[in-house]
Image 1 (cartoon, rainbow, N blue to C red):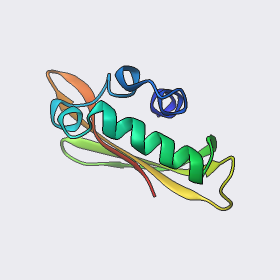
Image 2: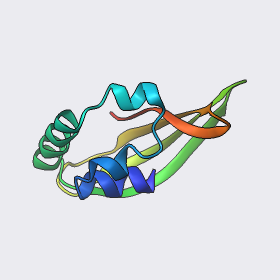
Image 3: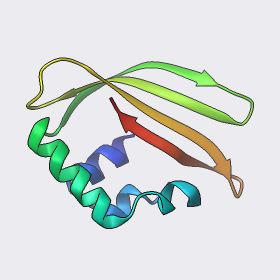
Image 4: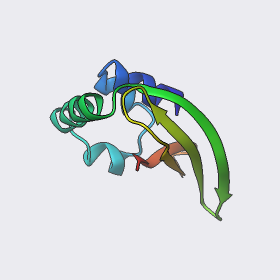
Length: 98
């Protein structure tokens, strides 16, 4: 998650998607990534503190959740990372901050 947050802050698309599954990468083009970063940074600011909430283990995947804060937006958000296996290594299937 640190890499994803740092790459989003720096608007570095290649770094952001480096651990994505093929499916996840195909669903997030560079122009969409840049638009999402611009909107999020404008509305919420930069990513700030994050605290682990839990890890859910499934037969072929793992979901990790954190309590996420931002520099501009008050309150707490939920950050979620969904990991699966592709080609013998863990890959990101989905990531979101709600």
